[in-house]
Amino acid sequence: MKTKAFLALLVGLLAVGLYVGTVLATPPSGLTTSTVARSSFEPLQISGESDPPSAWHVWMKTHGVSDFYVIDNKIAPGGTTGWHSHPGPSLIYVVAGQVTNYLADDPTCTPHVYSAGEGFVDEGGSDVHMLRNNGDVQAETVAVQFLQAGATRRIDEPDPGNCHF
Image (cartoon, rainbow, N blue to C red; front, side):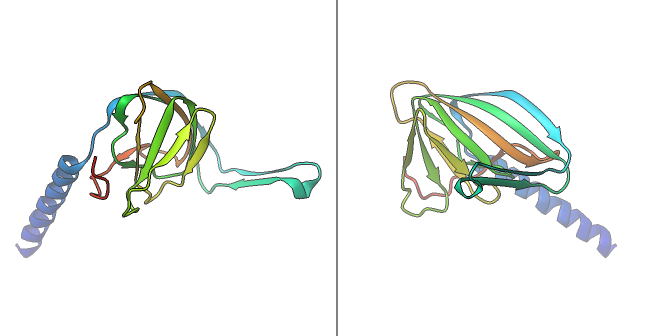
């Protein structure tokens, strides 16, 4: 009987946790997201270098199957992606307009502004961030995301309370 009561309590706590996580999540506004491409790859071990080799080198190694995405985000003026994270890294390129990246773990809410032609890296994992379009024209980003196969591409996160918009 104690085991059944414990299991019922555990299920109840999990349900409350999921409910609270959903209620506290900060949904996007003014955001249109399109998946341009998605493909799965078997484990990778890629290496490349320039001539001369000391000038540039790249190395990528994955364990297990990976899902790679190309995502197009259009953010209306005043729009936001909402606070979110990704389970893997993303290379983000600003195609049009300007976006401001805010980091949840930055107590000063320092704005990181990127304009068309610039790019930045979202390391993923526990890094929670939000993009905002503080401009008066539509902003557009293209992101290349590297994820473990089957992982949820985007995880909505609660407002960390460090940015007061």
